[in-house]
Length: 240
Ligand code: RET
Image (cartoon, rainbow, N blue to C red; front, side):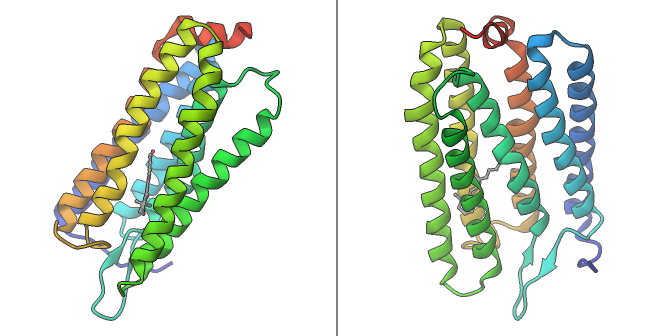
């Protein structure tokens, strides 16, 4: 890939800072995954992978290789983001599924698979929307939103009742994490619509800052909250 070369200095700085935060997060979660309590290890490990992927892609974008210029009249497409999201959003949903679904839940793989398919559909149609210059992009934006609604449907109506059955610690923890996830994830299409790929009412720097803050909260913040609840994670291990 040739990339578009250096971006504005403000944008580049924000991308490097975010890459650094992701690296620190990844080191922290990796450490926890080998030294922490057994019940927590799988969740530390998933968070470590999520932040490592993000660190890699942020470094790529900061170097000017994670963007392409859409011609003619072009806007910058930060395609790196979609690579990141294709892998990290399924892993975040896997966290919720591992919390909610007991190992002996019938059709566990089917439910998890359905959520992941809806999620990847959301990201890939969103990517296509970002490549299209004409108004037709909103058709793909709408398709992506439909995928997002399907994800929310699974999280709220399929996983939530199962989490409730697993005792009050898991139930409470699942609800807290789901609230954080829903609030943060809804903001992504909002930033997209406001940014260059959508209506173009906010400049690239503002868009970069918004996504950086969202990504740090949705990956590092979410991961920290996830591993902070010992009672709930021990119940996951105890197969309640
Ligand atoms: C797009 C644009 C099209 C419409 C929709 C979108 C949703 C994106 C989401 C992304 C979440 C990313 C996370 C990343 C980090 O950990 C693709 C922006 C609905 C929900 C959580």
